[in-house]
Length: 125
Image (cartoon, rainbow, N blue to C red):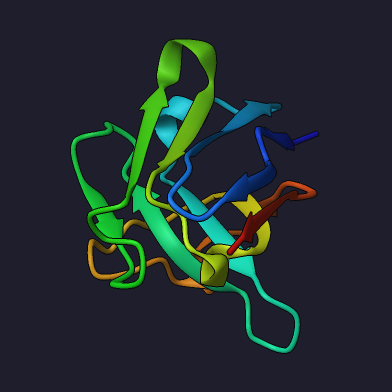
């Protein structure tokens, strides 16, 4: 059974930082692309950053480019999202997902069938 568990969310002030972690069990995480998505109520769940299985290719949505960094430690079956210079509009539920296809063009939801339960990030102004 595939299980993804996110951690690291919380409340920070504008300009602050958080580091999200996602630990995967039930599959060899090192063989799959991984992605971070977020959901703001009233909006579609959006892909914000993805990384290929080898960890040498990444994709970022324009809204987070230059502020967020995705990385992975395949030995620990864990993927990370370092979030710096946080803004109130980053407030959302953040999810990690295990994918099957890495296109290098974006984080397409249809390519990510396995999901965690999410961790809440709130940024105060």
